[in-house]
Length: 410
Image 1 (spheres, rainbow, N blue to C red):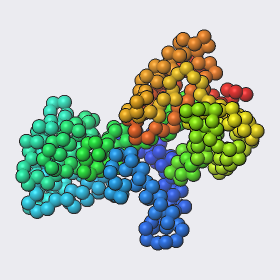
Image 2 (image 1 turned 135 degrees about the vertical axis):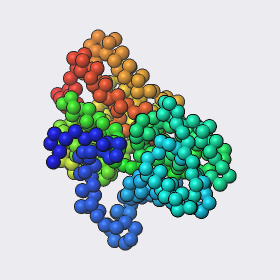
Image 3 (image 1 turned 180 degrees about the horizontal axis):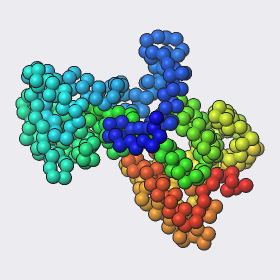
Image 4 (image 1 turned 60 degrees about the horizontal axis):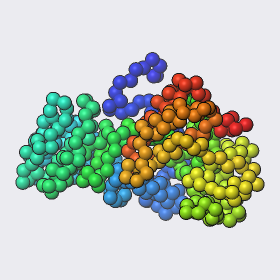
């Protein structure tokens, strides 16, 4: 029973679990609850493919060089024990810090008590940070590895991984990082930081779609989502899509295969035939139908890349679909750009541009279609969804109401 419960142990594990996570776990076991990699029958192959795709997603998210080195353990404690006890040899020395969780301190203590290794703990300063020079001072000729936390679950301080990683690289020593408290919240690139092993658990962070839907639900607001067929086909996204439908948002097509319909350099040059466009949209509509979105409910669609011409507009109209696009005048559609992109626009600048346009326009943002992406991927460490609630509140304070596209354009 959780009625009246105030849960304060989120540093250990998040509770209650997000409904989407619970649904996906149950449905995955119901659909693919077989052993991956142990058989050649269809279900085993599908399960193995799901595991492989998940490895690739995790590796890309954390900048890991090889998806085949992504290992699934029971939790972060299990992962850290596996790495530490699998790496050290008799006579080795290990450097850790006084901020470590028991998942690091206990195996080190056990190995030292057993006479296998010795270890030292680097101190932290009055602000809760470990000085890279303090780590360097503890390194010996027999130091096998440096093991340290990314973010303290007691103090909340985020440690200077880049600087400590350079110390380790200078000494030719691997750094093992306990990222249980920071993974998914603070950007981590294993290749850039020189991290040899990264341990984290998947129960302590969410991603953009959940945040967006939570903020909308909190304000009883409605929005419109346009998703590709490829997105809709991915089983890991099914809980998101079902929640979009269940909570009353508009769901429409965005191209089945995210095709570029006309040339970037010459918009008048159409890159698909009329028949190819029809097949692309019909396939996208079929995927929407799997989630209970009937064809007659789908009047509006958003082209891939938000790039189209007169051919695409007229051909889709003949299919009973009205092409729409975002209203120009703000920079909301730039939320997909990453920090390394030459056209990068920060979330703060995006919010300011939207509010600035509202102040300058004769009708404010009345009737505007603001485009935000459901996710930008690991290339953007400044996610717009982190400011989405703030944006909704500030616009609501100015008298705006958020509606579905079919309500706005009826």
